[in-house]
Image 1 (tube, rainbow, N blue to C red):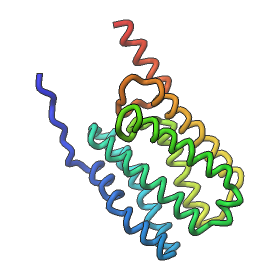
Image 2 (cartoon, helix red, strand yellow; image 1 turned 90 degrees about the horizontal axis):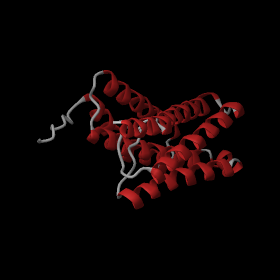
Image 3 (cartoon, rainbow, N blue to C red; image 1 turned 120 degrees about the horizontal axis):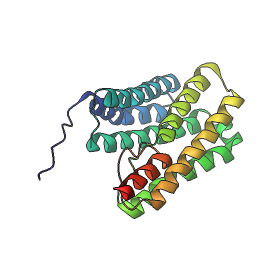
Length: 197
């Protein structure tokens, strides 16, 4: 039976594509030290990240292409956010270097395992991973606009570590890479159902 062809021309994919197109502009803002423009464009990217997922789920527009496109856009936004923090808030980052290094290492480990085992970026879209993206976005926005909040920073980092560790565990254990896996609980639930049938 011939597989149904995905309709990739939809609003969620357009929002993910916008985020990709914004990368060179955000990078230019970092290199030219345009702090305000960097913050505005990064926040727009973070908002469109939330919107594309919501729209895709609400209107049943989820596609394999969209999942992969969104993952690339997520990775780019995460890397640019870290780069921007390093350039614009070097003293803060260096003062909390252990937190940021651990965050970067866990994230890089997930990417490395995915490329080594499956030859491409992960597009698991774990609930914990998505929530960590929202928490990081809120941190960046509130940090640049209102200032540093130590309690929220600690909570955001802890959640991010757990989310990245969950992704790493799944990438190390699943036999094949699938999109929209949601989490460890859902992975084992699906495996249990497949054994029953």
